[in-house]
Length: 111
Image (tube, rainbow, N blue to C red; front, side, top):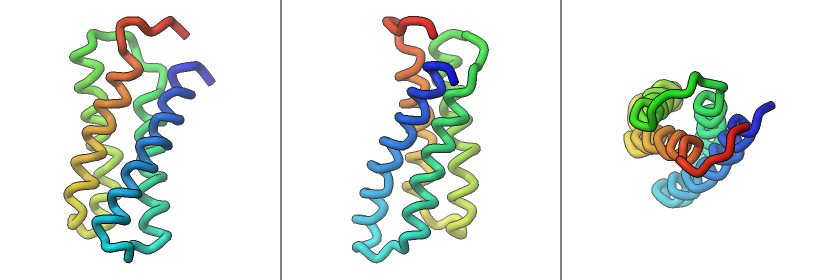
């Protein structure tokens, strides 16, 4: 497993924690453990998709790739909620961009 993938998986897991805390608070502490786990796991999968060994490209294209991957992966969770959890869907897109931005920063040493 290369450094990029490890960082992306850890980042996805950490962003997932932030996301589930937000979802838990938005639900008034009534979200089911299954829903919370599914949301966290979805963020880990975003990390997996973004962290794959993609071809090196410009930063703007990398950020767009992160947004697209975040959208595609988050759509699975969004559809499972009956298209009702708009905030988590949009957050998934943002998290894809955040992860890709972190992984494609200029001062990053190569794997």
